[in-house]
Image 1: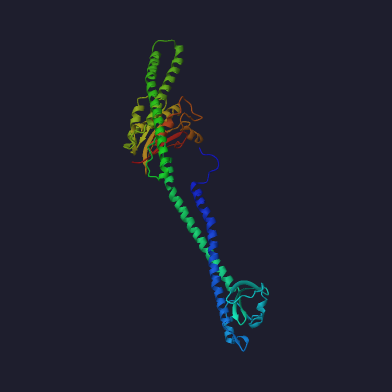
Image 2: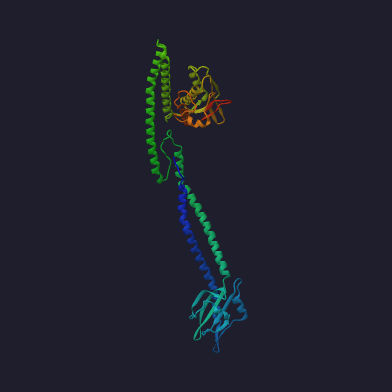
Length: 457
């Protein structure tokens, strides 16, 4: 029996190990993808600023020995046009003098250093608490290099960064959920043969020890073979036990019957009357031992797996045969045994079911008490057929009924000399037939009603 805290299922453990790399790798891949996309997007935006800087550099001209930047008012508006950001530019001469544009742009932090002609630098700067993206271009002009600076605020860049982050996050979450669902499904499919094997093992008992024949993955074949070897050993041990039990019961029946006959003959012969109680006690002990031997033989027959339990039969015939047998037995004084029988078609083994009924009747006769009324009934209701024995004796308290159907267990209020095997044998026989034995209250009064319920044929 498994005790203590239940362990995590194998399915959850496998799923957890599958998801662990996903939880570690997927965020790293998402961050790398975000960085790649953002760097590409920022490169495109920087290319736009660099195009503006190249346009301004193309307007630098030396006329009459003086550097000039030919930018009209219309061109200035075009260069500064942006629906989201503010654009600034300035063109500096070789000595750092302002040739055109926003002179305040030279005060950005950190200050840009002069670049040689043909060089370009992109950087993030600040101008009076405003964050800007700056492109600086060096352009040959005369004896030195002019500097073209173009900058813009970061509104569209921040918006684009947020959108890229949101899209990467949403797609990453969707991918994670998809992979988790696929992993869960794959684990379930992979473990389904093991689940089927467990269900098949749950249905096995000492009456069904045939080898497992399910087609399993290669990894589970050794486990199936180990179970089959275990079933083979259990079957051999159970068969040896049944044979010993049957042989012992059979060997005991003949001497016990002879001993009972000898005692009864001794009671008929002339003898001292003071010996009658002793002889009666001996006879009762021998009768009880013979009954026990018969029950042990029935128990061995019950566990015989070669018995065909699929024979069509009528429980009414089973009860009738038992009634004819009991008609020739001596019932205790004042005891009434009656039968109320109706057609009840089922499938099973007539001899075993009769043995179960015999045990129920014998229990009622033994424990119901003097003057008891015992009724045997059978019939069918829907998809079930039933056979029951009812008496108006003291009965068994509901709390003790489950224990009363165990071997060598008797009710706390039971009288007589029973061995505690009758109900257990009947329950085993009924269980082998796919039915159940219930101990119920008697109809309309004290007593016990033992009811056998079987699937209808």
